Length: 336
Image (tube, rainbow, N blue to C red; front, side, top):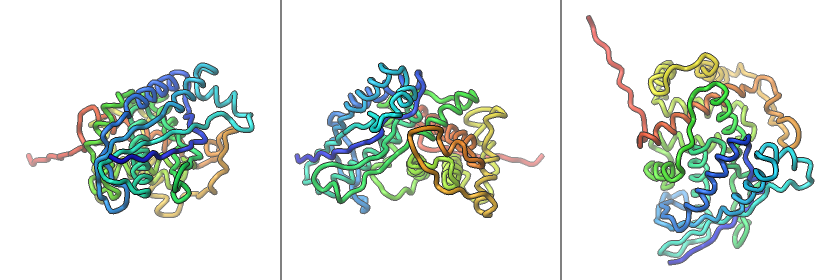
């Protein structure tokens, strides 16, 4: 057996959260830290889809310590961020490591590639368990060969907004799922073993990752991604089936309260973007101090995007709970 350790620095690892949400997130990360100790992980480290079996150990102790400190100091992540926001260097940074073991020699490229895939799977699993539970901002690799590879970043703001939108509208119902259950479901999708999604569920999961990367979370591109997510999960991508999206959604999640019904508006914005009749905004300045720029810009469709992501999360949680990988619809008709 050979092993390599990939070290990752995260400048801002503290996600958004009120008191209750922050406690749920901390509990999740405590489960994550205990779960990944020489766990089997099948993945492909490069673009050739040459999957191999690995053992993975993830040292997330620093993340747990940061979150525990924030809760003990301020009672919630949001209050801690506000209290520490005027520091020159806010204490939100941590170092984590991913240790990979395999029978064959692990090349430098495969080491960084498999570690990146593992972190992507972690972003998916954490957000399905507790929406908005993971944040990897200002990231870079440390160690041998680190200068040759760029670490990816993921924001929690949009997913936290989706969680808040669901709570405010009292629909759809988002639950806190066991991490081991969600990770096992992800393994069934085989999403870690490919870099090109062919199955609809993997198309949706890879698109979910692109949404989680959005820092200008109310941008035109994000509207497109969220609309694509819903249409893919509900098998409405073929031309002419988009009109059935609302009906299929009600079949699974029940009647939609008027204040939470963002489906038609989301589709209208998507169509207007294609027709170039929608305003286009400059990418905003992003910072940790003051009011979020994206929340104050007019025409950024924040409630629509967050509502759409809340629905997406509810659908993914429904698939996990029913051990399913897709929805199948049969429309019946007859003459009388």
